[in-house]
Length: 316
Image (cartoon, rainbow, N blue to C red):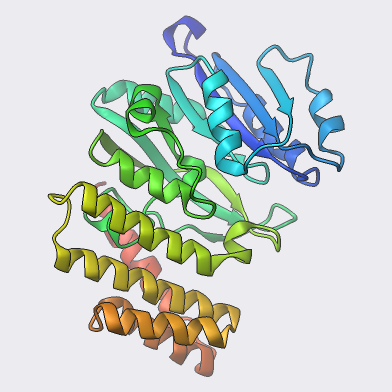
């Protein structure tokens, strides 16, 4: 392994609130990394479960720091942590997610190899409450225009240069559900992105995750983020391209509504998608998903995985 002085300090922040069930696994995944120059902060929002007792177990590790006080939500906790950090490379890992072994080293090496890159990300897998892999995040190689249409980047796998985050303004506290997507969009005019086709992190799926509880407000916030970035950077997309992107996100909301069995949200998102820009490929995926539901097949997922693989192979 490389000498500690050869590598910049990497600062990781974990926002936390009553996640005592999972946070030990999260902390362990960071502190057992094979990266020699690490700073790790857990910013807790005043947990009342076993979280604080778990945090105290790690106080003897000089790399580990924690703070517990009421905050204004996840984005506030992450920003507070980043402002306390000293490293030129930053990341955040939620208190129920984990890093794969070697993740930090791999992402730092990628940033060192390409100084023009300010954001590097990789593959993310979904795990359940027992930490068993249950699926893969549909990560794609980076494409500036494509990012407006689909969530290319699995947040737990993303590492940032501090100076790029300072230019973009860190996380916008007005966002509760799409704060990572909004940040990625605001970084588009600031820096370049790089995708590494290696497994970097896990994203845990359970009943209390925000993506499970709030896919409707997440979709609404995503649309707002697209509208804002396109208004502020008109060269990024034309009005027609903006409509297509927003329609795709409404179709995505319809797909989630179908999965969740939410008839009200399903009708809402289908109508919004049709009103915004009706004839989109995502509409075909939606219809295929309906067929899967009634025929008990899995063609939509197979098609998505095929497209993921095809896109990845183009950069191999």
